Amino acid sequence: MSVTGELARLGAATVYEASGREGLVDAEFKRLVPRSRACGPARIALCAQDDNLMVHAVMERLQPGEVLVLCMPEPRPVALLGDLLLTQAVARGAAAVLVDAAVRDSEELSQMAVPVWSRWIRSRGAAKETAGQLDVPVVIGGWEIRPGDLVVLDADGVTVVDAARADEVLEASLAREAKEADKRAQLEAGALSFRLDGLDARV
Figure 1 (cartoon, rainbow, N blue to C red):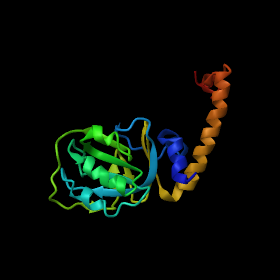
Figure 2: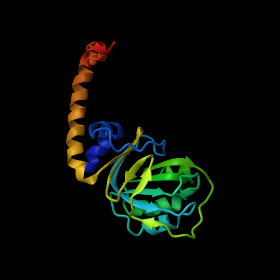
Figure 3: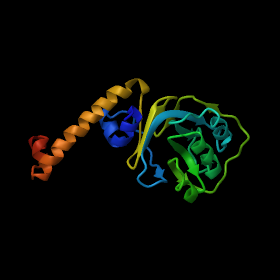
Figure 4: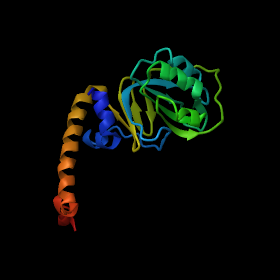
């Protein structure tokens, strides 16, 4: 399996812990497709405030396997994405879409091939008048996401991995998974984490 495929399987929480507790996007997002998970390099559209002109523009650059990251200077419940824009992302082969704003057509989006994570669901539409920027670093939930950074999304939220650390973080995540499997077996046999982790010494 590819690095992105393995990171998606391992999930946002494991990758966050294994990376040294780095990369946390500390904001709550709605996952529109149940049980979906994804990982891919970030393709970023920084829109003007309450405007989605750059979402239309970024589709031309979107490559298969990328995670489309859509945001504005200030996150607000204005819909940057609906079913017609997501249709384009599906056709371009996106892995997922992260929207630090709102989406609409949510029932339709929940049935489409590319999963979406959004901060809000609202009908309020965006303007299409003001240019923003494409493929620039942005800060979402207190963490900077740069073009090409790997974005891991699942039920627990969003974790960002520096592309230069991808192999290192994957190795650490796999080691954490193996260690937790061993610990789970001990817990199932009746052991207590209070003892296994040495927490009893702190009480």
